[in-house]
Length: 225
Image (cartoon, rainbow, N blue to C red; front, side, top):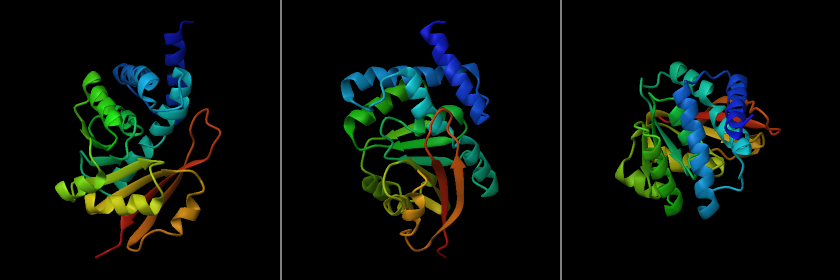
């Protein structure tokens, strides 16, 4: 079996475990993202992971593990048909790029202030022709002043402590907007310092294929009147 076949087989096994059905075009886009990430990583040090198989199991599957939960939240909390999701501190595009590939009708705004990472995100946007993706190469505080209240939800993957993520998210969100925080199980400690005016409305275990670590997705909404 060739390396390409091994990569595709690993991707297919992970998607099956997550109960995700993606088209061949979407799978191809995920694989090209993996290849480009590794190519840029050799120069720009985006991640310590430098293997296609490891990238799929440790990064892609971790990012995609929230897809079904996001879809359920969209229905339950009556989000728009094409919700706008801001990925704060997007880094090398995780989870924003895989989510934009898996959810083409959703709109994703990836916010990353580090220039080399923002440049990579712009490169991937063009390389994969992701029309539902916008890259903002600026600080979150600057975006908050320029476009307050534009997002239906924010998401992050190990971006910062929960209280900081909530404070960063608040000015970006529309009324009734949601916060999705991808965390390890130690998140219970961070919830103790949750800023006032916010309520935990979801705490879902994430089962990431081939990853022996605990993950969860916290969903928050504002209870301010």
